[in-house]
Image (tube, rainbow, N blue to C red; front, side):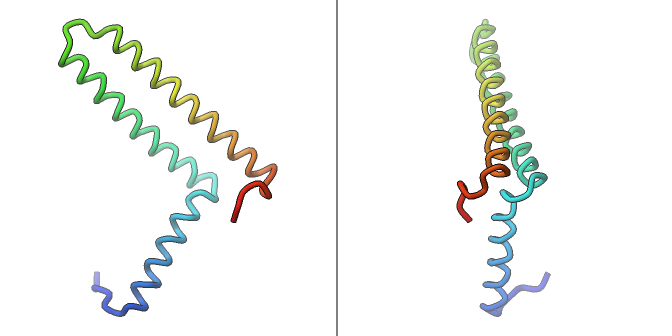
Length: 98
């Protein structure tokens, strides 16, 4: 890939990148993709926490159950919140800014 040395070309490329990022919150498919990435990050963090508990404690069963319940609640809450916001955005777009 050729290096951009022209300041105008760099500004245009940066503007294109910023617009692409802003559009990620406008379409449902992009929003769902963003949500899936967020759930993957949550799942990876959950796995790291559970692995750390299994390595550090002799009998971490109650911690495993506790963190599994918390993980389920966080994912469930974020799913419900995302669906609610998407529905409100469709029904009342005037409540949301540009």
